Length: 163
Image (cartoon, rainbow, N blue to C red):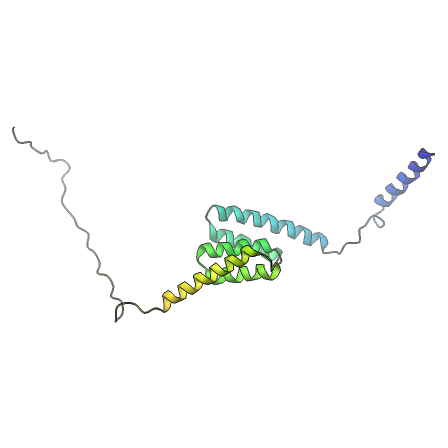
C-alpha cells in the first residue's frame, strides 16, 4: 500500500515543479533584485571594511557609500561610513552617519558613543577656529630660509701632521 501512495505523490510533485505556471512563487517581482542588491551591498561593505582596516579611509568611505546606494537601510554600512569619516576628521559627516544608524537602530550603544565623540570633536574644532590668535595683527609669514652651502672637495687628500 505504501508503494501505491508514493508513486502518485512523486508524480504530482514532479508535475508541479515542471510546470512553469504552477511552480512559480508568489514573491514580489522586485524581490529577486532586492535580494541581489542586498548581497552586493554586503559584499561592498566587506570590501570597505578591508580598506578601513588598511587605513585607507577615503576609499573605504566611497565603498560604503556605494553599498548604501544599494541598501539605504543597511545600518552597519552607515556605522562603518561614520567611522571612516571620523577617522578622516570629517566630524559633521560622521555625526550624520551615526544619527542615521540610531534612526535605524535606536538601541545601538556604540553608535551613541561614537556620535557623542564626533560631536565633541566638532565642538573642539569650532572652538579652535573661533579663538583669536595670540598676536594682535595678522599673522606674519615666516621668512624664507636660505640654504647654507659649503664647498666640499671630494678628491682632496688631507695631510696628517708628523708625530
